[in-house]
Image 1 (spheres, rainbow, N blue to C red):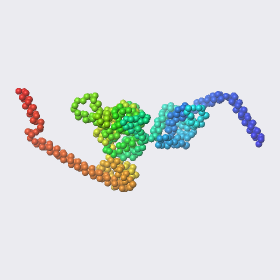
Image 2: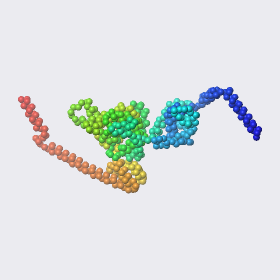
Image 3: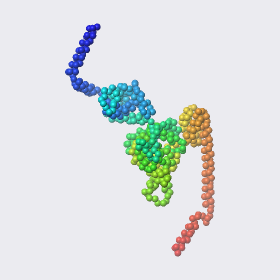
Length: 513
Protein backbone atom coordinates (compact mmCIF):
# COMPACT_ATOMS: atom_id res chain seq x y z
CA UNK A 1 0.00 0.00 0.00
CA UNK A 2 2.86 2.30 0.82
CA UNK A 3 4.47 1.56 -2.52
CA UNK A 4 1.20 2.52 -4.29
CA UNK A 5 1.06 5.93 -2.69
CA UNK A 6 4.74 6.48 -3.38
CA UNK A 7 4.32 5.72 -7.08
CA UNK A 8 1.22 7.96 -7.28
CA UNK A 9 3.09 10.86 -5.71
CA UNK A 10 5.97 10.46 -8.11
CA UNK A 11 3.53 10.40 -11.05
CA UNK A 12 1.89 13.59 -9.91
CA UNK A 13 5.29 15.19 -9.54
CA UNK A 14 6.20 14.24 -13.10
CA UNK A 15 2.90 15.69 -14.38
CA UNK A 16 3.47 18.92 -12.48
CA UNK A 17 6.98 19.17 -13.89
CA UNK A 18 5.71 18.57 -17.42
CA UNK A 19 2.97 21.23 -16.97
CA UNK A 20 5.49 23.79 -15.72
CA UNK A 21 7.81 22.89 -18.57
CA UNK A 22 4.99 23.37 -21.10
CA UNK A 23 4.14 26.75 -19.57
CA UNK A 24 7.77 27.79 -19.95
CA UNK A 25 8.07 26.48 -23.50
CA UNK A 26 4.53 27.50 -24.59
CA UNK A 27 3.59 30.80 -22.91
CA UNK A 28 -0.11 31.88 -22.73
CA UNK A 29 0.26 34.13 -25.78
CA UNK A 30 1.52 31.21 -27.87
CA UNK A 31 -1.21 28.88 -26.64
CA UNK A 32 -3.87 31.52 -27.46
CA UNK A 33 -2.43 31.94 -30.94
CA UNK A 34 -2.46 28.19 -31.50
CA UNK A 35 -6.07 27.98 -30.35
CA UNK A 36 -7.01 30.81 -32.65
CA UNK A 37 -5.31 29.17 -35.61
CA UNK A 38 -6.96 25.85 -34.86
CA UNK A 39 -10.40 27.51 -34.72
CA UNK A 40 -9.79 29.16 -38.07
CA UNK A 41 -8.75 25.88 -39.60
CA UNK A 42 -11.82 24.22 -38.14
CA UNK A 43 -14.10 26.99 -39.47
CA UNK A 44 -12.42 26.80 -42.85
CA UNK A 45 -13.36 23.17 -43.32
CA UNK A 46 -16.68 23.40 -41.45
CA UNK A 47 -19.90 23.85 -43.42
CA UNK A 48 -21.55 25.84 -40.60
CA UNK A 49 -21.22 29.38 -39.30
CA UNK A 50 -22.27 30.69 -35.90
CA UNK A 51 -23.77 33.99 -34.70
CA UNK A 52 -23.96 35.02 -31.05
CA UNK A 53 -26.81 37.22 -29.81
CA UNK A 54 -26.10 38.35 -26.25
CA UNK A 55 -28.71 39.62 -23.80
CA UNK A 56 -26.79 42.80 -22.98
CA UNK A 57 -24.87 44.73 -25.60
CA UNK A 58 -22.40 46.75 -23.56
CA UNK A 59 -24.70 48.39 -21.01
CA UNK A 60 -27.91 48.34 -23.08
CA UNK A 61 -30.42 45.54 -23.52
CA UNK A 62 -30.21 43.87 -26.92
CA UNK A 63 -33.61 44.15 -28.61
CA UNK A 64 -32.77 41.29 -30.95
CA UNK A 65 -32.27 38.98 -27.96
CA UNK A 66 -35.75 39.82 -26.64
CA UNK A 67 -37.21 39.35 -30.10
CA UNK A 68 -35.63 35.91 -30.48
CA UNK A 69 -36.84 34.93 -27.03
CA UNK A 70 -40.42 35.94 -27.91
CA UNK A 71 -40.25 34.27 -31.31
CA UNK A 72 -39.06 30.99 -29.81
CA UNK A 73 -41.87 31.24 -27.26
CA UNK A 74 -44.41 30.65 -30.00
CA UNK A 75 -45.28 27.29 -31.52
CA UNK A 76 -41.61 26.80 -32.34
CA UNK A 77 -40.78 26.15 -28.69
CA UNK A 78 -43.32 23.39 -28.28
CA UNK A 79 -40.91 21.13 -30.15
CA UNK A 80 -38.27 21.49 -27.47
CA UNK A 81 -37.62 18.81 -24.87
CA UNK A 82 -37.28 21.20 -21.92
CA UNK A 83 -39.12 24.51 -21.73
CA UNK A 84 -39.41 27.38 -19.29
CA UNK A 85 -42.73 29.14 -18.61
CA UNK A 86 -43.03 32.89 -18.07
CA UNK A 87 -45.79 35.48 -17.81
CA UNK A 88 -44.86 39.11 -18.35
CA UNK A 89 -46.36 42.10 -16.58
CA UNK A 90 -49.66 43.30 -18.10
CA UNK A 91 -49.76 40.15 -20.18
CA UNK A 92 -52.74 37.85 -20.55
CA UNK A 93 -50.85 34.81 -21.86
CA UNK A 94 -48.19 32.39 -20.62
CA UNK A 95 -45.18 32.14 -22.93
CA UNK A 96 -42.78 29.26 -23.46
CA UNK A 97 -39.03 29.56 -23.68
CA UNK A 98 -35.89 27.49 -24.04
CA UNK A 99 -34.24 26.33 -20.84
CA UNK A 100 -30.60 26.93 -20.11
CA UNK A 101 -28.22 25.42 -22.68
CA UNK A 102 -31.04 23.78 -24.60
CA UNK A 103 -31.32 23.92 -28.41
CA UNK A 104 -34.11 23.77 -30.98
CA UNK A 105 -34.42 23.49 -34.76
CA UNK A 106 -36.45 26.00 -36.79
CA UNK A 107 -37.27 26.09 -40.50
CA UNK A 108 -37.57 29.18 -42.70
CA UNK A 109 -38.26 28.96 -46.45
CA UNK A 110 -37.09 25.36 -46.48
CA UNK A 111 -33.84 26.16 -44.64
CA UNK A 112 -33.13 24.62 -41.22
CA UNK A 113 -31.42 26.62 -38.49
CA UNK A 114 -30.41 25.70 -34.94
CA UNK A 115 -30.95 27.98 -31.94
CA UNK A 116 -29.07 27.30 -28.71
CA UNK A 117 -29.72 29.14 -25.46
CA UNK A 118 -26.29 29.61 -23.85
CA UNK A 119 -26.13 30.52 -20.16
CA UNK A 120 -22.77 30.88 -18.35
CA UNK A 121 -21.64 32.38 -15.07
CA UNK A 122 -20.29 35.90 -15.37
CA UNK A 123 -16.82 36.56 -14.01
CA UNK A 124 -16.29 38.81 -11.00
CA UNK A 125 -17.40 42.32 -11.85
CA UNK A 126 -15.59 45.52 -11.17
CA UNK A 127 -17.39 48.58 -9.86
CA UNK A 128 -20.14 49.71 -12.26
CA UNK A 129 -22.98 52.21 -12.13
CA UNK A 130 -25.25 49.49 -13.56
CA UNK A 131 -24.64 46.07 -12.03
CA UNK A 132 -24.87 43.27 -14.55
CA UNK A 133 -26.70 39.96 -13.94
CA UNK A 134 -24.71 37.12 -12.43
CA UNK A 135 -25.48 34.95 -15.46
CA UNK A 136 -24.44 35.76 -18.99
CA UNK A 137 -27.26 34.84 -21.36
CA UNK A 138 -27.39 34.70 -25.12
CA UNK A 139 -28.54 32.78 -28.18
CA UNK A 140 -26.27 31.11 -30.69
CA UNK A 141 -27.59 30.74 -34.22
CA UNK A 142 -26.03 27.96 -36.31
CA UNK A 143 -26.67 27.97 -40.04
CA UNK A 144 -25.03 26.53 -43.12
CA UNK A 145 -22.65 28.87 -44.90
CA UNK A 146 -24.53 28.53 -48.16
CA UNK A 147 -27.68 29.88 -46.44
CA UNK A 148 -25.95 32.84 -44.84
CA UNK A 149 -27.28 35.52 -47.21
CA UNK A 150 -30.87 34.28 -46.97
CA UNK A 151 -30.87 34.12 -43.18
CA UNK A 152 -29.23 37.48 -42.56
CA UNK A 153 -31.38 39.32 -45.11
CA UNK A 154 -34.82 37.88 -44.41
CA UNK A 155 -34.94 35.52 -41.44
CA UNK A 156 -33.93 37.99 -38.72
CA UNK A 157 -36.43 40.57 -40.04
CA UNK A 158 -39.06 37.84 -39.95
CA UNK A 159 -38.13 37.05 -36.35
CA UNK A 160 -38.47 40.72 -35.35
CA UNK A 161 -41.86 41.01 -37.07
CA UNK A 162 -43.25 37.87 -35.44
CA UNK A 163 -41.95 38.98 -32.05
CA UNK A 164 -43.77 42.32 -32.35
CA UNK A 165 -46.95 40.48 -33.29
CA UNK A 166 -46.66 38.15 -30.30
CA UNK A 167 -45.93 41.07 -27.99
CA UNK A 168 -49.00 42.92 -29.23
CA UNK A 169 -51.27 39.89 -28.79
CA UNK A 170 -49.99 39.19 -25.29
CA UNK A 171 -50.49 42.74 -24.08
CA UNK A 172 -53.85 43.98 -22.87
CA UNK A 173 -55.67 46.00 -25.49
CA UNK A 174 -56.74 49.52 -24.57
CA UNK A 175 -59.83 51.61 -25.18
CA UNK A 176 -59.04 55.31 -25.58
CA UNK A 177 -61.33 58.33 -25.46
CA UNK A 178 -60.46 62.00 -25.97
CA UNK A 179 -60.27 64.01 -22.78
CA UNK A 180 -63.19 66.24 -21.90
CA UNK A 181 -62.84 69.73 -23.26
CA UNK A 182 -59.54 68.91 -24.98
CA UNK A 183 -57.60 68.72 -21.69
CA UNK A 184 -54.35 66.78 -21.38
CA UNK A 185 -53.47 64.04 -18.93
CA UNK A 186 -50.42 63.98 -16.65
CA UNK A 187 -48.19 62.88 -19.55
CA UNK A 188 -49.48 65.57 -21.90
CA UNK A 189 -51.62 63.20 -23.98
CA UNK A 190 -55.13 64.14 -25.14
CA UNK A 191 -56.36 60.53 -24.85
CA UNK A 192 -57.44 58.69 -21.71
CA UNK A 193 -57.31 54.88 -21.71
CA UNK A 194 -58.84 51.93 -19.90
CA UNK A 195 -58.25 48.19 -20.48
CA UNK A 196 -60.42 46.84 -23.28
CA UNK A 197 -62.12 43.64 -22.13
CA UNK A 198 -65.04 43.32 -24.53
CA UNK A 199 -65.62 39.58 -25.20
CA UNK A 200 -67.27 39.97 -28.61
CA UNK A 201 -65.75 37.90 -31.43
CA UNK A 202 -66.81 37.02 -34.94
CA UNK A 203 -67.78 33.57 -33.68
CA UNK A 204 -70.35 35.02 -31.27
CA UNK A 205 -71.49 37.89 -33.51
CA UNK A 206 -75.12 37.43 -34.62
CA UNK A 207 -74.71 38.02 -38.33
CA UNK A 208 -74.98 36.21 -41.63
CA UNK A 209 -71.94 33.84 -41.82
CA UNK A 210 -71.24 34.68 -45.47
CA UNK A 211 -71.08 38.40 -44.70
CA UNK A 212 -68.89 37.74 -41.65
CA UNK A 213 -66.39 35.76 -43.70
CA UNK A 214 -66.27 38.57 -46.25
CA UNK A 215 -65.50 41.12 -43.52
CA UNK A 216 -62.89 38.89 -41.87
CA UNK A 217 -61.11 38.30 -45.17
CA UNK A 218 -61.10 42.03 -45.88
CA UNK A 219 -59.62 42.76 -42.44
CA UNK A 220 -56.99 40.07 -42.87
CA UNK A 221 -55.99 41.38 -46.30
CA UNK A 222 -55.66 44.86 -44.82
CA UNK A 223 -53.52 43.75 -41.87
CA UNK A 224 -51.19 41.75 -44.17
CA UNK A 225 -51.15 44.32 -46.96
CA UNK A 226 -48.20 46.52 -46.08
CA UNK A 227 -46.27 45.66 -49.24
CA UNK A 228 -49.40 46.10 -51.38
CA UNK A 229 -50.14 49.57 -50.04
CA UNK A 230 -46.52 50.62 -50.45
CA UNK A 231 -46.37 49.27 -54.00
CA UNK A 232 -49.57 51.05 -55.05
CA UNK A 233 -48.71 54.32 -53.31
CA UNK A 234 -51.77 54.27 -51.07
CA UNK A 235 -51.93 55.17 -47.40
CA UNK A 236 -52.17 52.08 -45.22
CA UNK A 237 -55.64 52.76 -43.86
CA UNK A 238 -59.20 51.61 -44.48
CA UNK A 239 -62.65 52.92 -43.67
CA UNK A 240 -65.79 51.01 -42.66
CA UNK A 241 -69.30 52.40 -42.37
CA UNK A 242 -71.70 50.45 -40.15
CA UNK A 243 -75.30 51.47 -40.61
CA UNK A 244 -78.66 50.05 -39.72
CA UNK A 245 -81.39 50.18 -37.05
CA UNK A 246 -80.45 50.48 -33.36
CA UNK A 247 -79.66 47.18 -31.62
CA UNK A 248 -78.29 45.39 -34.69
CA UNK A 249 -74.79 44.91 -33.25
CA UNK A 250 -72.71 47.81 -34.60
CA UNK A 251 -70.74 48.23 -31.35
CA UNK A 252 -70.28 44.47 -31.06
CA UNK A 253 -68.92 44.45 -34.61
CA UNK A 254 -66.29 47.05 -33.66
CA UNK A 255 -65.25 44.99 -30.63
CA UNK A 256 -65.04 41.83 -32.77
CA UNK A 257 -62.81 43.66 -35.27
CA UNK A 258 -60.48 44.82 -32.49
CA UNK A 259 -60.25 41.34 -30.97
CA UNK A 260 -59.70 39.75 -34.38
CA UNK A 261 -56.80 42.05 -35.30
CA UNK A 262 -55.52 42.70 -31.73
CA UNK A 263 -55.86 46.47 -32.30
CA UNK A 264 -56.48 49.22 -29.78
CA UNK A 265 -59.65 51.33 -30.10
CA UNK A 266 -59.82 55.14 -30.11
CA UNK A 267 -63.42 56.21 -29.43
CA UNK A 268 -63.57 59.78 -30.73
CA UNK A 269 -66.26 62.00 -29.18
CA UNK A 270 -66.71 64.85 -31.67
CA UNK A 271 -68.74 67.00 -29.28
CA UNK A 272 -65.62 67.38 -27.10
CA UNK A 273 -63.50 68.63 -30.04
CA UNK A 274 -63.59 72.39 -30.54
CA UNK A 275 -62.13 72.90 -34.01
CA UNK A 276 -60.43 71.25 -36.96
CA UNK A 277 -56.95 71.92 -35.60
CA UNK A 278 -57.74 70.05 -32.37
CA UNK A 279 -59.21 67.18 -34.41
CA UNK A 280 -55.98 66.93 -36.37
CA UNK A 281 -53.89 66.88 -33.19
CA UNK A 282 -55.98 64.02 -31.83
CA UNK A 283 -55.28 62.04 -34.99
CA UNK A 284 -51.55 62.64 -34.65
CA UNK A 285 -51.61 61.22 -31.11
CA UNK A 286 -53.10 57.87 -32.18
CA UNK A 287 -50.87 54.84 -32.63
CA UNK A 288 -50.57 52.43 -35.50
CA UNK A 289 -52.52 49.17 -35.43
CA UNK A 290 -55.58 50.94 -34.07
CA UNK A 291 -59.26 51.44 -34.86
CA UNK A 292 -60.56 55.03 -34.74
CA UNK A 293 -64.31 55.03 -34.08
CA UNK A 294 -66.93 57.76 -34.41
CA UNK A 295 -70.27 56.36 -33.29
CA UNK A 296 -73.61 57.88 -34.32
CA UNK A 297 -71.89 60.41 -36.54
CA UNK A 298 -75.24 61.78 -37.72
CA UNK A 299 -76.07 62.76 -34.11
CA UNK A 300 -72.66 64.10 -33.00
CA UNK A 301 -72.46 67.50 -34.70
CA UNK A 302 -74.14 69.27 -37.60
CA UNK A 303 -72.35 68.25 -40.79
CA UNK A 304 -75.21 68.52 -43.28
CA UNK A 305 -75.46 72.25 -43.91
CA UNK A 306 -74.08 71.88 -47.41
CA UNK A 307 -77.36 70.42 -48.67
CA UNK A 308 -79.34 73.12 -46.87
CA UNK A 309 -77.24 75.87 -48.42
CA UNK A 310 -78.10 74.61 -51.90
CA UNK A 311 -81.73 75.66 -51.29
CA UNK A 312 -80.71 79.20 -50.43
CA UNK A 313 -80.94 81.43 -53.52
CA UNK A 314 -79.11 84.39 -52.01
CA UNK A 315 -75.60 84.94 -53.40
CA UNK A 316 -72.83 83.63 -51.18
CA UNK A 317 -69.11 84.25 -51.21
CA UNK A 318 -67.00 81.22 -52.13
CA UNK A 319 -64.67 81.97 -49.25
CA UNK A 320 -67.50 81.60 -46.76
CA UNK A 321 -66.62 78.54 -44.64
CA UNK A 322 -70.13 77.15 -45.09
CA UNK A 323 -69.64 77.07 -48.88
CA UNK A 324 -66.43 75.07 -48.63
CA UNK A 325 -67.95 71.68 -47.79
CA UNK A 326 -68.41 72.59 -44.16
CA UNK A 327 -70.78 74.00 -41.61
CA UNK A 328 -69.97 76.57 -38.98
CA UNK A 329 -72.52 76.48 -36.18
CA UNK A 330 -74.01 79.65 -34.93
CA UNK A 331 -73.45 81.02 -31.43
CA UNK A 332 -74.19 78.37 -28.90
CA UNK A 333 -74.95 75.72 -31.53
CA UNK A 334 -73.32 72.36 -30.81
CA UNK A 335 -71.84 73.87 -27.67
CA UNK A 336 -69.50 76.20 -29.57
CA UNK A 337 -68.15 73.38 -31.74
CA UNK A 338 -66.66 74.68 -34.99
CA UNK A 339 -65.68 71.43 -36.73
CA UNK A 340 -66.48 71.55 -40.44
CA UNK A 341 -67.23 68.76 -42.83
CA UNK A 342 -64.06 69.70 -44.67
CA UNK A 343 -62.08 69.18 -41.45
CA UNK A 344 -63.63 65.77 -40.89
CA UNK A 345 -62.93 64.74 -44.49
CA UNK A 346 -59.29 65.77 -44.10
CA UNK A 347 -59.19 63.82 -40.85
CA UNK A 348 -60.14 60.60 -42.66
CA UNK A 349 -58.61 61.13 -46.09
CA UNK A 350 -56.31 64.15 -46.02
CA UNK A 351 -52.54 64.45 -45.89
CA UNK A 352 -52.49 64.31 -42.08
CA UNK A 353 -54.31 60.97 -42.10
CA UNK A 354 -51.30 59.43 -43.88
CA UNK A 355 -48.83 60.31 -41.11
CA UNK A 356 -49.56 56.98 -39.39
CA UNK A 357 -49.93 53.49 -40.75
CA UNK A 358 -52.24 50.52 -40.30
CA UNK A 359 -55.22 52.52 -39.08
CA UNK A 360 -58.89 51.67 -39.51
CA UNK A 361 -61.65 54.29 -39.43
CA UNK A 362 -65.11 53.10 -38.41
CA UNK A 363 -68.21 55.31 -38.54
CA UNK A 364 -71.61 54.16 -37.29
CA UNK A 365 -75.02 55.65 -37.98
CA UNK A 366 -78.68 54.72 -37.75
CA UNK A 367 -79.63 56.99 -40.66
CA UNK A 368 -77.23 56.79 -43.58
CA UNK A 369 -79.43 59.14 -45.64
CA UNK A 370 -78.50 62.01 -43.29
CA UNK A 371 -74.78 61.78 -44.11
CA UNK A 372 -73.13 63.85 -46.80
CA UNK A 373 -72.23 61.87 -49.91
CA UNK A 374 -68.66 63.20 -49.76
CA UNK A 375 -68.19 61.34 -46.49
CA UNK A 376 -69.36 58.03 -47.98
CA UNK A 377 -67.21 57.71 -51.06
CA UNK A 378 -64.45 55.12 -51.46
CA UNK A 379 -61.16 56.20 -49.93
CA UNK A 380 -63.00 57.47 -46.86
CA UNK A 381 -65.55 54.75 -46.21
CA UNK A 382 -64.29 51.88 -48.36
CA UNK A 383 -66.74 49.25 -47.15
CA UNK A 384 -70.40 49.89 -46.28
CA UNK A 385 -71.78 47.21 -43.95
CA UNK A 386 -75.53 47.08 -43.42
CA UNK A 387 -76.36 45.74 -39.97
CA UNK A 388 -79.83 44.35 -40.60
CA UNK A 389 -82.53 42.74 -38.49
CA UNK A 390 -81.92 39.24 -37.18
CA UNK A 391 -81.99 36.59 -39.90
CA UNK A 392 -82.33 32.84 -39.48
CA UNK A 393 -78.54 32.12 -39.49
CA UNK A 394 -77.99 34.94 -36.98
CA UNK A 395 -80.81 33.53 -34.84
CA UNK A 396 -79.06 30.14 -34.72
CA UNK A 397 -75.88 31.86 -33.53
CA UNK A 398 -77.80 33.53 -30.71
CA UNK A 399 -79.38 30.21 -29.75
CA UNK A 400 -75.90 28.70 -29.59
CA UNK A 401 -74.51 31.59 -27.53
CA UNK A 402 -77.25 31.80 -24.90
CA UNK A 403 -78.78 28.31 -24.79
CA UNK A 404 -76.06 26.09 -26.21
CA UNK A 405 -78.51 24.81 -28.81
CA UNK A 406 -77.58 23.69 -32.31
CA UNK A 407 -80.11 23.04 -35.04
CA UNK A 408 -79.96 19.32 -34.21
CA UNK A 409 -81.09 20.08 -30.63
CA UNK A 410 -84.37 21.67 -31.74
CA UNK A 411 -87.51 20.04 -33.06
CA UNK A 412 -87.96 20.18 -36.83
CA UNK A 413 -91.38 21.81 -36.51
CA UNK A 414 -89.93 24.54 -34.24
CA UNK A 415 -87.10 25.19 -36.67
CA UNK A 416 -89.59 25.51 -39.52
CA UNK A 417 -91.71 28.02 -37.61
CA UNK A 418 -88.63 30.04 -36.63
CA UNK A 419 -87.43 30.14 -40.22
CA UNK A 420 -90.84 31.28 -41.48
CA UNK A 421 -91.43 34.04 -38.95
CA UNK A 422 -87.99 35.52 -38.17
CA UNK A 423 -87.72 37.63 -41.35
CA UNK A 424 -91.30 38.89 -41.01
CA UNK A 425 -90.80 39.85 -37.36
CA UNK A 426 -87.92 42.29 -38.07
CA UNK A 427 -86.52 41.97 -34.56
CA UNK A 428 -83.00 43.11 -33.81
CA UNK A 429 -80.39 40.79 -32.27
CA UNK A 430 -80.59 42.91 -29.11
CA UNK A 431 -84.35 42.25 -28.77
CA UNK A 432 -83.93 38.51 -29.31
CA UNK A 433 -80.99 38.37 -26.90
CA UNK A 434 -83.13 39.96 -24.19
CA UNK A 435 -85.80 37.26 -24.57
CA UNK A 436 -83.17 34.50 -24.36
CA UNK A 437 -81.36 36.05 -21.39
CA UNK A 438 -84.59 36.46 -19.46
CA UNK A 439 -85.40 32.75 -19.83
CA UNK A 440 -81.89 31.28 -19.94
CA UNK A 441 -82.50 29.09 -16.86
CA UNK A 442 -85.09 27.05 -18.78
CA UNK A 443 -84.13 26.40 -22.39
CA UNK A 444 -87.52 25.01 -23.57
CA UNK A 445 -89.29 28.04 -22.10
CA UNK A 446 -86.79 30.37 -23.76
CA UNK A 447 -87.49 28.81 -27.17
CA UNK A 448 -91.27 28.99 -26.74
CA UNK A 449 -91.13 32.58 -25.46
CA UNK A 450 -88.94 33.57 -28.40
CA UNK A 451 -91.25 31.93 -30.93
CA UNK A 452 -94.24 33.68 -29.40
CA UNK A 453 -92.45 37.05 -29.43
CA UNK A 454 -91.48 36.59 -33.08
CA UNK A 455 -95.07 35.72 -34.07
CA UNK A 456 -96.46 38.71 -32.17
CA UNK A 457 -94.04 41.10 -33.82
CA UNK A 458 -94.67 39.59 -37.27
CA UNK A 459 -98.45 40.00 -36.88
CA UNK A 460 -98.04 43.58 -35.75
CA UNK A 461 -95.82 44.37 -38.73
CA UNK A 462 -98.31 42.75 -41.06
CA UNK A 463 -101.16 44.84 -39.61
CA UNK A 464 -99.13 48.05 -39.85
CA UNK A 465 -98.17 47.32 -43.44
CA UNK A 466 -101.82 46.67 -44.31
CA UNK A 467 -102.94 49.97 -42.79
CA UNK A 468 -100.14 51.77 -44.58
CA UNK A 469 -101.09 50.24 -47.92
CA UNK A 470 -104.75 51.24 -47.42
CA UNK A 471 -103.71 54.78 -46.58
CA UNK A 472 -101.49 54.98 -49.62
CA UNK A 473 -104.25 53.63 -51.87
CA UNK A 474 -106.70 56.22 -50.49
CA UNK A 475 -104.20 58.99 -51.14
CA UNK A 476 -103.69 57.76 -54.69
CA UNK A 477 -107.46 57.65 -55.33
CA UNK A 478 -107.88 61.14 -53.95
CA UNK A 479 -105.11 62.47 -56.18
CA UNK A 480 -106.69 60.81 -59.20
CA UNK A 481 -110.08 62.40 -58.38
CA UNK A 482 -108.50 65.84 -58.07
CA UNK A 483 -106.78 65.47 -61.43
CA UNK A 484 -110.09 64.30 -63.00
CA UNK A 485 -111.99 67.33 -61.61
CA UNK A 486 -109.26 69.64 -62.87
CA UNK A 487 -109.51 68.20 -66.38
CA UNK A 488 -113.32 68.40 -66.42
CA UNK A 489 -113.48 72.06 -65.25
CA UNK A 490 -114.36 74.73 -67.98
CA UNK A 491 -111.56 76.81 -69.45
CA UNK A 492 -113.01 80.11 -68.16
CA UNK A 493 -112.74 78.70 -64.66
CA UNK A 494 -109.13 77.76 -65.28
CA UNK A 495 -105.91 78.67 -63.73
CA UNK A 496 -105.38 81.53 -61.39
CA UNK A 497 -102.67 82.74 -63.70
CA UNK A 498 -105.08 83.66 -66.54
CA UNK A 499 -106.16 87.06 -65.15
CA UNK A 500 -102.63 88.43 -64.72
CA UNK A 501 -101.85 87.29 -68.27
CA UNK A 502 -104.88 89.15 -69.72
CA UNK A 503 -103.96 92.32 -67.86
CA UNK A 504 -100.42 92.11 -69.16
CA UNK A 505 -101.69 91.76 -72.76
CA UNK A 506 -103.95 94.83 -72.41
CA UNK A 507 -101.05 96.90 -71.03
CA UNK A 508 -98.86 95.87 -73.95
CA UNK A 509 -101.54 96.90 -76.49
CA UNK A 510 -101.91 100.33 -74.89
CA UNK A 511 -98.16 100.86 -75.06
CA UNK A 512 -98.13 99.95 -78.75
CA UNK A 513 -100.83 102.57 -79.43
